[in-house]
Image (cartoon, rainbow, N blue to C red; front, side):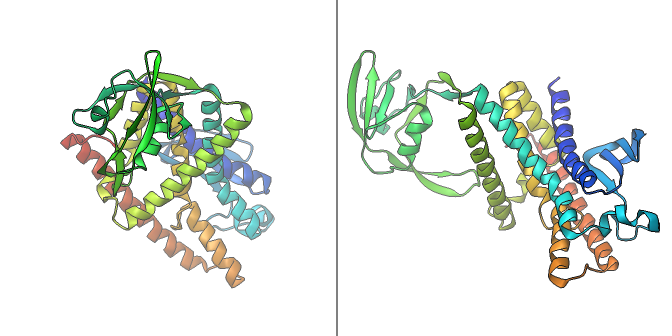
Length: 355
């Protein structure tokens, strides 16, 4: 069932992306010939009106085929007004951008309901004190609850760790509740080298404690949930863009690139962790949007790049140039996919854990 959930999740995100293209093509008066989930040979299909709706054999994406979309498409004079390439730039750009935009909006909606329903967060209660650590030397004990740090209230574990991590070799003040008594303790976090999510070394402060694992649920009202959903989407968007840049700079190793096997495995793992983790993982929709906006021919970003060049030049690139660019784009994408699948298979054979 968890694998089926993963399949349905990926299929849903692809459907949302293609639905954006489809809706804006229809709104722009462009004739849509095909709406397909998957590539390659048709598995099942049905034509409704002027559009054929397909489920295709290779479940690694989808597409919306519009009249006159390809440079070498031959058009009847009667259909020119409804062809994609005869639309003004702003209409074509809106059709192309609608796919990634729908993915961003999907992430916002998912996060909105997650915040509205409630997020489990760790309570600031000590579960373990490491030997010879600043915490053990300051006589902090298992079961102590952190009430304040530097005079500011602490409601959840991350409220405490944010201050501690930024206070290496700097004394801080902790107000601790132990049973029914309250104590003020001065402690200096020791400096430690660690790696961030991008694998880069950084210096943080640590006092040598671990959480108890006790949690409580934080629910937000409608307006706060909407605001936090937008902020979380922007945060993940920023981190994803930074991650791609660091991958190009080789700061992040290329063997971290994953293909469909890794994506399905991660989705399956989140499904096993529970509904909340699964739906939060659905925010991978943001990654899908950003990857599609990369300026690579055949991707949405490549189409937008061609339109930007057309706007500057005052005329479109030649059909020959676009066809060559598309071939180069396909070679690049297929090579990248082959490399990602190689990484997936290597992880399976070697037993390397998923990120």
